[in-house]
Image (tube, rainbow, N blue to C red):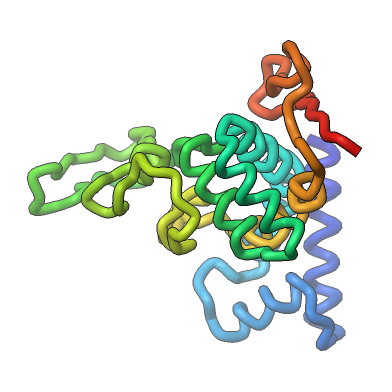
Length: 228
């Protein structure tokens, strides 16, 4: 709690100092302040501080978990692994990325988004699936199953690398889209590409070749091998 207070105080000062002494550096904070000047909702000083806190805290565990889950799924799919390997070798970033997102559709690092209702409301009003939600209710939006909805996703049970980015709600949807989604889009393929370039990439035999979370929500160990 002491460290949390220190982090909040530090970020408040950084935000205030930059507003008092503006710069044109292409930083995330400057982009947020530009949104604030355009009266973007959620981009007041407190909103900016909270979003930066989320990026700092969430980036490492979320990105590492998603990278492990994507690789885990890819190693179960030799044909897809071959596609990713060849794309990585020729520097085709888009195919590598598309393969990773499809892996995370089948094996998401975060299969639900949960929120607590702040007021009484109705979900899907005037439809057959209409449901009343009372204030204080914890709501789970199952993004995993939604990405297999045959009314929206073409041939959802097929593993395909030609789906558009909009197909995936791995990082949430609408107003609940993770602020780090665009960062993840760039960083996760960049992390995995050097590994995917390796010849005969495979799991290490035994338990070491399976994701070990050690009772936590995040992977601690995941061993793979390749030929030099």
